[in-house]
Image (cartoon, rainbow, N blue to C red; front, side):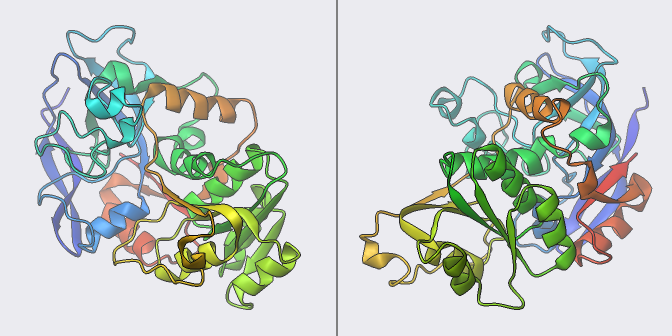
Length: 358
């Protein structure tokens, strides 16, 4: 095993560059995986732009597929050479947050103590996945073996995008027969659209401005799509639902405009499930909130992690209920990670997700 590796490192706002870093040492409960495929997330772009703070010199990325290179001395139940994924969120399994059933907010075990998004460690508080090797903490909680027959690209969305999108539908409490509107059909919104359909919604409305994304939304389960560049989205959704409004709306972009529209289309007692990462304060309009007496619910979700969550997501793929390989629209070598960021950050050439291979 080499002593040095290539890694995509945050240098300063506007600069993520490829550098040489030491291959991490493996502690008793850790596992070192050799990354075979990873990707770039919208949150990584927030880091690139300086909208989400991380330490300079940190390796970025939180969506790994790889092969176990070395196991910690106390790790049981895995073998070196085994294909695995690890969630973007890596709970310890023993913290107060985990034992309260909220492992996504587990900040224990980091150098920085607890903070919001604490369970998200890769590329946030510890070195991440856009590298040749990745150290996975609490390996027995977080490593999920990849079923035989599934490719890297088939399971690449599981660590974050699929888990996040599905959790948006789960947090919304969608029931059989519900009407659901999903605002923004980027990778997370597309997975939320699919998650809403799998949860039993019989009317799923996908909202976006990009025709290719609206077409992908149809492929993944949207019954109706609304082009926000051509119509007033709130009026159109109320028209589609006969004035009733939707039972749940899922906000997957992180802007005031989409959050407000998602609130305005709810029926009385409906739920707004928010997945967007917001970089400015939100305002809740009085009329949309029914002055606070509309029995509305607003819920937020950070994607669940851990090996059981990853197993469940991969079982959905293995059973043929979801095919998310089509979300990979571009492929780059890790050597070209700066070009990949330039493409993804500017959303050029119809990009949805980029597969990065060391």
